[in-house]
Image (tube, rainbow, N blue to C red; front, side):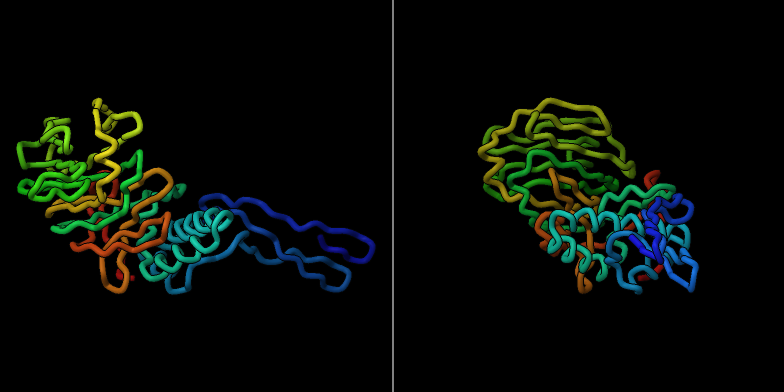
Length: 289
């Protein structure tokens, strides 16, 4: 509230169009003599991103789209900060270290086709501490000689809780391995190399869903809960993993590729390289941050 003389003047907050960058903005007010001048625009909420981070995002997406992505990222962090300031601060630190992590957060940015960030060619696993989840979803694709892999690491004794293979191993199929109740079981057939698939595991309802088609499952929940969940790609492609109220976001920290758990803000180092495509599979290359 601004009081000028005997008048009360309210500040103004409104939403900008997406073409103007989106987000809520507030008019600043300057009193000059007998006049009140409504001046520049200030975004509501905190700006979490460093100048260098914003410059990298604008360089990668272009001026218009880059500003929209920056606003969406700040909105994401401000919403998180409303319930957990420490978590928002930690996650902002990861993004400022790796600006293109904005492609790993599942952001929906009006007017912008967000690219998919892929982990490619990892031959190891990254422990993600997902042993208590009931639901998860991720995208994958595979080449003609390898497969994607998700689940607990399968040891020589075959006692791991769950592993999912998608790819060439026994044909172009998605198959699961569950111990101690079963060995390999084919869940989906006739998948194609190079095609982007979205795979959802709903363990609470015992279904697996591939691009909207579901199959019923029967899991040994005791064995599943005891497993240490992880992922690897074996020279194929996997993107960020959503599970319950967290995202395992692909990131590069201090030159190391890995996964940031947005629930705990822990970084899990992995191996491999990162590539980008648009949702239709078209290659996409950001500028170097």
